[in-house]
Length: 240
Image (tube, rainbow, N blue to C red; front, side, top):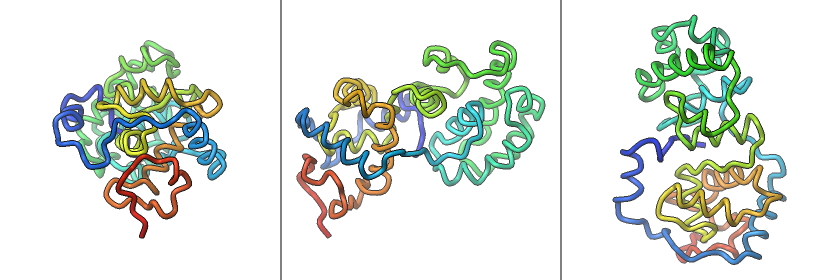
């Protein structure tokens, strides 16, 4: 899951809105019956999908997701075990200090600003919330470095809220397949909220990310192994 908050980042939002749309971009919606079958098959293929970021508690998950903005899960996972071994609570992170946080995450892109954000959000959590992680999107997005997408990821994984965080993978899969077409990540999220059947909403986030990461890839989709091949509206399927 490559995590970055689009709605909170004007530059990233611009990338989605103003570059020419790729050939897979479609506004052809999938039928309701096909949407149900789409998720039924993904569930059958992977009944209990999991995120790929390393975390040990809601706080470390929040930090990991913040660090994963414009970075890969693999890269973040190389840095966080050592960081979390010495600072797995907001107060411990504050005590560690911004310079030491920076040293632990220097292999991750934008590590200077991310170190500042992790330190600042840890201060707020320690002083305002007694070290606990708020469980509402409205509170989470007030934390430094936390946008709507990051908040949705934390709510979904840590607290099992049926939220869907639209990253590049989900944006692509939703448009390419016709599952939930939309011109912006926020539009796709709103459409997914409407069309995903309730029984699939808790895991929809992970199913779509994993499908986009390993099967419905941006440049070379592996259509020949796709479980939802026949339900997909993509006109340029790759068969070999």
